[in-house]
Length: 110
Image (cartoon, rainbow, N blue to C red; front, side, top):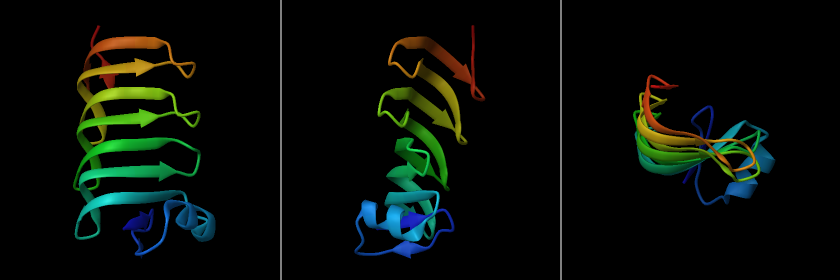
């Protein structure tokens, strides 16, 4: 199942069809709790970024990876309430490591 940013469901459609035909900014495939992403899932953003990982109540929560539009990792690690939180690694767009360590509320703890 796929969902767009307005939480409309697209049953039986492929990811490519949803992004091209809906003209909307996001498509989602994965587990749901009602209409919100919850559990394991993957989001495709219009700007080319992809998030794959755990969701709770429609937000990144637990372990997940966010990728640049060139498919290089942007962040890999723990999330809480949609923010980087816990152990994680961030990367520059060229794929080189920018930071490896602890995060709190979306910011590195140095």
